[in-house]
Image 1 (cartoon, rainbow, N blue to C red):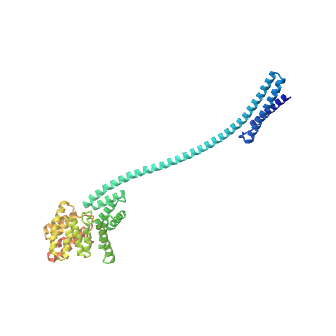
Image 2: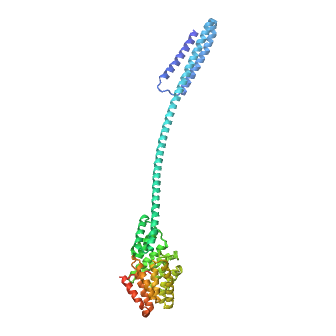
Image 3: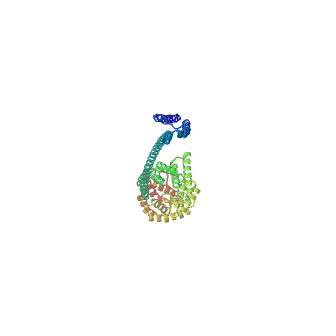
Length: 430
């Protein structure tokens, strides 16, 4: 009976384990083993061990009654049941652990794939953004390089035109020089030198409004550009000399003086585009204000800077007369004649040198030689400059007054012929 009981217990245990296994297989989603399950398995194992011990006791008793073969069969049956039970228990635990691990692995894989996909999308987006930025920069660099090449080409052409304009001016072609400088300004609108050159030539052409505009623009580009300061001062001097006596005239002449002095303080040896010292223009301003000593000092400074030019000494000669020093005047005119003669030999188109040579010879009473020079003066006078004859006429009238009525009789015919070239008198150039 006991043997049957043992077999019954083993059978029941085996059926229980199989039921548990089937229940797990029917579960849709395996769950990881928990503490309750583990405790149940250990309980079953303990129970099996107790049953095995009991079976062993039964075997000992059975050996007294059963044959050797019956005992061996019982042992085999018990061991088979134990092995089956242990296999089922191990399978249950292993299956449930493996399912949990697979589920966790699948979850991790899906999360990693999602993160990798998002990183890839961000990377692709950033790379496209960088490519777009690089394309914009490349376009900007290409446009900048093209603009620099075009600007350099325009600047080179403008520089060539400046050289041409300077040659035109020196050959007394004022209108041609203005056209050339305007073309240069179109190529390089912010050229300091072009604005200055335009202002200077417009001054010599008598267009003081345009001269003022371009010289002011030059000073906006560089406010301490000495040539433009002095040239603008001379423009204001010319404007002031045309104004009637009064406060506005004095204010304008004061402004002219200030600009000339500012330019000369920056560059004391500054000369204009005719290679004459700007101290001479300041001396002319003082002379018209009847500031004789200041005028003499200014012209003497000009003579020191340009000792081979007759311009300063010609003006000094007439100032000496105002100081009642006729001998000094004649001595100065002798020097003027020598210097002017050298200048016209070096440059046959130098109108101002011819004008000084004419004045010196008339002052020294050399009428015949003066007549030859007078014809040259008429021939080479710049057609585009309205005041060259006016300036010379003003000088001869002052010389006549200095020499007196008796000694100036020979000046009459020269003055009359010049007067025919001057329909309306304006401010002089010196």
